[in-house]
Image (cartoon, rainbow, N blue to C red; front, side, top):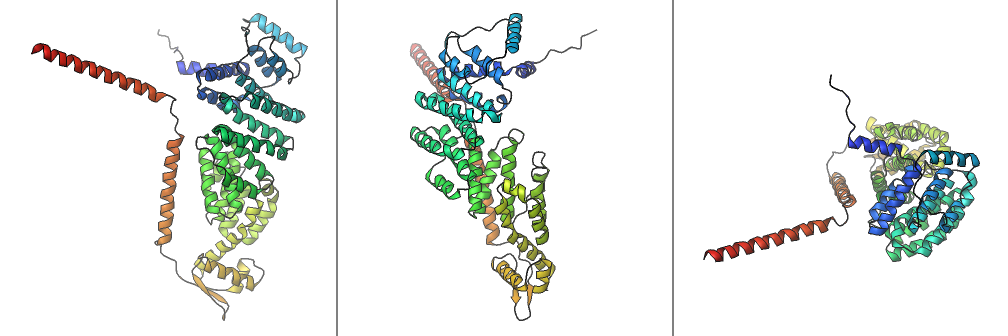
Amino acid sequence: MASTDTKPTKHEEKKDEERTLTPTAEIKINIALIERAVAELEPRFTHRVLRSLTALRKRINDKVLRDAIEENYPAESTVKAKLLSWLPPAAEAEMDIDSTAQSASTPPSKPTSDPVPEAEIYIRLLIIHHFHTSKENYARSIQLSNETVDKMLALNRRSMDPIAAKIWFAVERSYELGGELADARPLFLAAQRTAALRHDDDTQASLINRLLRSYLHYNLYDQADKLVSKTTFPISASSPQFARYHYFLGRIKAVQLNYTTAHTNLQAAIRRAPPAKTAPGFYQAVHKLFVVVELLMGDIPDRSIFRHPVLEKALAAYFDIVKAVRTGSLSEFQATLTKHATQFEADKTYTLIVRLRQNVIKTGIRRLSLSYSRISLRDICLKLHLDSEEDAEYIVGKAIRDGVIDGRIIHEKGWMECEGRKNGYGPDVSEVYMRRIAYCMDLHNQSVKAMRYPLDAHRKELAAAEGAREREKELAKEIQEGDLDED
């Protein structure tokens, strides 16, 4: 009888190895990749290490960090002693378990020299993120962040630039958790000037986002707008950095009543953002602002947004606002605003949602203009729950002037006459069509720019082309010599 057992494929074996890889072993592999990046001057290995940072920092603890330092540094290393001083000493029971496990398995080979300085900064980055998990270590995370920044600036190595960008994010998070975010702003401004002079795109992009976040945290929208106008965001920045930058731009433009530009920036942020399950908090924050901006533009968001698994619960209050705006019920809008005011203030969208009152009234007037060819101002006042007929007359007059409805007010008789619907053609439609074409072209250009190509791949093609030309010359020479021999 033939055996039905099948051998696992190489892909499945690789997956199993990745699944059983311990955090300590992963840190050791990452340090090896960082050393390879420094030796070969290939930053893509460092970027590969940093891409796994989000998943790795959730699995580390004191023991993992201590074991990683022990395995990658020699016993007499001063760097090792400095790093271990930030971690609590190992418990006796824990040491007994470690010694038993090491005697049962083959002991790892001890390194004879310190790794490159980039590896030390990487381990410091992991320790800072570990400090963020407990409130008792917030003050220590600020101290370690300042010490790491001083060491990083003293080393002044260009191969450290990708890790430095992550360090600045950790510094900002340390100050934010410690309630001292404003104190870090001068540090960010000085570092941003230095990064711009050195053309360090990774660090410059990270620091611009750090500064914008600091300004918006304290509602300093004018200073944030000045920073955007005085700086140029690097084109070579990573997609997550671009997503944050577009989100901050969207918030600034929305507060400045520039809803079209805000909508464009928020669309770019959603497109460039990491997957929803990878960064659910950012995904929800962008969509909350996106829904409000769409409502302020006079559009109704797509219902599928509110059915997304990651967004369904977070956008429940915003869905109630959308329903109130869509029906044009001012009383329902006020009740929903009062009910969810605490959440809107926490999301920093309350002031934008208050502006929607005029949109709710315009929607109600538009619905009345489609339902009635003639309606009195008093009936409009009753249906829209307005305070007086004078308010109704003012609002209707503004809606007619803005082109929301096509009609006129008969002041003598106290009513509004509505005309028929406009056709669907004209200059407005062509402008919308051109905007859509421009958006598609811009999306195509950004997609081409975001494509990744292996470094120095063109050199192999050039070498192959040169070899082909040499062979053609040799072949032509042999043919020529053969023709002469025949003559």
